[in-house]
Image (cartoon, rainbow, N blue to C red; front, side, top):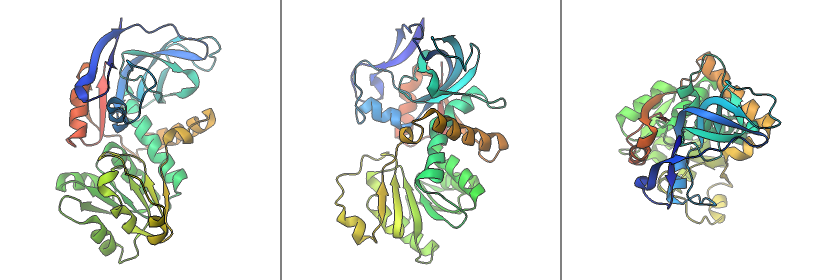
Length: 324
């Protein structure tokens, strides 16, 4: 019998209940997976608290994982039983087994294990679209990246270093700043001790940044806008401190006719071709060693509540994985 962490009503970490579940045979276009590792991300917190409402209860959180195909639905021809696959979305990952649309999983290349694959799909593909699509970073780009010692941030620092961009990171405390610098950040601002706007101005000699990447939300807004050059781009892609409240568009003109976007991975991998291209680009930099996935915390699936508590209290760095 399969097991899963199910949420019957939204709330704190302890609303997740470890329960027996029945996983049906795969329908047309689906595969059934035996999961070996499950990634934990801040979006799971948003699902659990109701910030991102789910259509029905109970539901199973979890947006990424890796496992082996154990059954195929009708019409699935490009996968076989025993294939090692990984995915990012839709929800349902906190489970020992699950169904997935076959066109939403990608084969894991040799040389990448299940834990690494589970920890990299959502975060790694997020970095890929942010730096390759949302803003096309090159060696002449100066950028600010908040929460650089988190899972997404550490992947970003490494990938951006390989491009040659100037990366100004923020992190909380000297240990986390060291992690960001070791990963490839050019500079790191300890936001607990320093005013990041003043430091960005000093580091850039007043020239400021081409783009700001912000997964913090409320606590870093609108100060992040003061780090941008005129016509710069503010990319808000997470709400770790809570969502940004209503924005009056005139603030964008007042700050230098800057741009603001709230992208989502789903829009960048909506077609099978885009998913495969994005995943393969990520697999390539990991296999080359350009990007190392730091799986710094592993919890049993049934201990997912503790994983969420540690994530929300900012006790974690790098990636978090649950094992069934």
